[in-house]
Length: 47
Image (cartoon, rainbow, N blue to C red; front, side, top):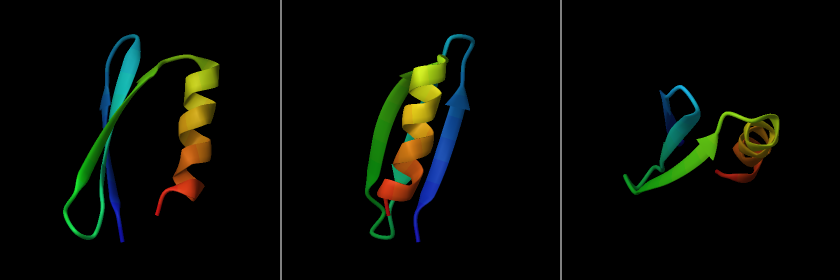
């Protein structure tokens, strides 16, 4: 199982993905259609 934390800002959002081993991975996205789509597509790919 993994967890995803989201920190929303005015023009961007930060994602922290925490895997079962407790290792975290941070990613930054802009609040644009392309970046939101990229993030959504990454949800199925990252496990």
